[in-house]
Amino acid sequence: MKRATVISRLMGLLLLAAGYPSAGFAQDTLQPYQLVRSLQLIQDRIAAGDHAAMPMQAKLLEMTDARLREADAEDFKDARNFRALLVYGMSGGNPVTVEAAVSRAAADPPNLAIARGVIDYLNGRPGEAIEALTPIDPMMLSGDLGAFLALVKGSLLAGDQPAVALTLLDEARLLSPGTLVEEAALRRSVGIAAAQGDAARFALASTQYVERYLYSPYASQFADSFVSGVIALHMSISQDKLADITSMMDPEREKVIYLRIARRAAIDGLGELSAFASARAVQGRDGSTNHGDPRALLYSSLSTVTSGTIADVRAKLGKIDRSRLSDGDRALLDAAQTIAGEVVAPPASLPATRAAASPEPEATAVKADDAAGLPPVEGAVSEQPAIAPSGTKAAAPASAPAADSTTVLPASAPATSAGPGTTDPTDAAMMKTRRQLDLIDQMLGAAPK
Image (cartoon, rainbow, N blue to C red):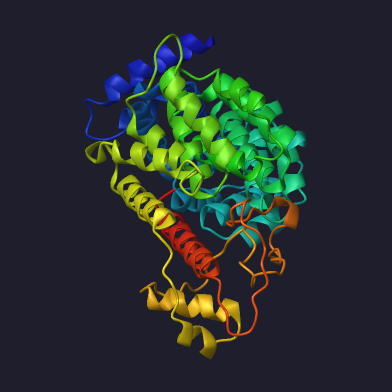
């Protein structure tokens, strides 16, 4: 039967069933495997972007659940019905219904092993599910069951065996192209590839997802993984490749993606990526620009808040319309304005008597900082080297190589030796700035991403 004919018949059945107080009409008309196949067709339409089919999916799940709860051993003598039961479970079905139906079925040992694994998976027992499903090769099963099983196994192994998981997700796509299974497999592949640092695989999976499933109702999960992956792999993915992927999106989705990348990049201190993403968000497509979007202006300003153009940055921040920002972005704006003000604040001079009491310049700077009313920063993480006493070289932190670090000291500031009983007020000023940067890092990191 042709796909269009099946869907037309299904819609008619749903309309008729809607007039009944229960799903009895469908139970008397269709076998479990017919209902589950109809459910798959609807889910594939949803994956392709037909959001109007979602109420039909809910109704079909209800009807299928009722039919399977009443199914007996005679029904499950038809192998298609038992396979349909397993596919129903892996399609978002009720685990209680699946477990009860399996107990009534006289299935062979291999199918019962699959059933046990599926039930463990549905009930949140991943260890038991992996143990039951590990010996089973999805490629040796019928197409629909094998595809769902490969998807489930790939999801279960994503954390401990990511390479194996990616292979299983590829098998799921091979067995069921153009379906909700492929959509879910691609979506999961994006996140796993990013976690593995596999930029090529990440870019390929992202490209395929955008080409085929951008309008899926689950695309927001892809967007989360994509933005996180771009941030994690920013050293491995070129801006040209990023632009190639986003160019397949419609202008509004592309703008939102770039805004999200710009925000995350600014918070993580990736100035170049933040500037690129902000510019792309503002640029727009087809002659349409987004110069009035306050988010792009805010995110582009965050990455340059301690730069030499701080006066320009403060002016830009002052022009942002706070009323058009979310609560989280208003917090970012407040944080950016705070640190911008501290960067241009004149350094506080240190009393000579206090300097004499603290012979170590670094300790003196910290005490001066406390006197300025700054709270101590606990657990602040910075990719910049700590400010060392004058005349010494700052050591790079263990979390980042020295080549990747930057210094808050101006390039024009000469290194001078601090003799006993003397204190360079610049050291105190720079330590104050460093502490303020740590504070702003904490404020930005605590903000919603």
